[in-house]
Length: 219
Image 1 (tube, rainbow, N blue to C red):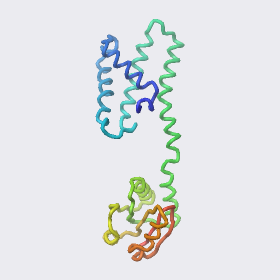
Image 2: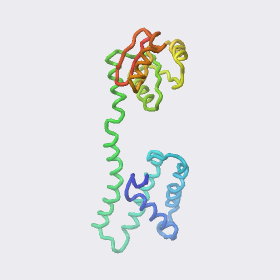
Image 3: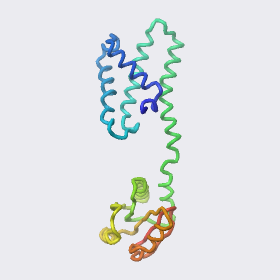
Image 4: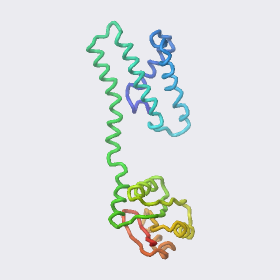
């Protein structure tokens, strides 16, 4: 299914190459490089069979399939019934199929990660920068803060999600952090943060700097 997402001819190219090799087609097997490419394409994805696989994990397979497509087209060109016009049409169909996936990805990835830059813009407006600690409990939240740290040239101290409030204050004191950033998903969680030990020890509390984010300033 991953191969079909990449190109609707990818699986067909792979099966045709496998058939030519198994049938000992002289033109295909005489070049040992074809065997190496085909073997790599078959073996490389095996390591991902027992885990979640994404297209980016097997990007080298896509490149090899494009090369194998060129090999098959070269062989097809010399077939007796193949006319120049038909050959050009087949080439256009094959290589156009490899363009569909990148084009779709460009559309799907449009504005992806925009919320991370929105956080940076909101923090910049409040002049929030320097060393900060955060309670990011998901990879997505942590990724946003890393982008903010990079763009603002700040220092991000990563903490464990299960860390206690006393431990948070110790981390803030140890690293002399300027801010503690907290995410919340409900009004109940927000109220709990505003009445927490961390809030009582903060010099200032910046509420809703960005949606779902509270910033505690310590210096």
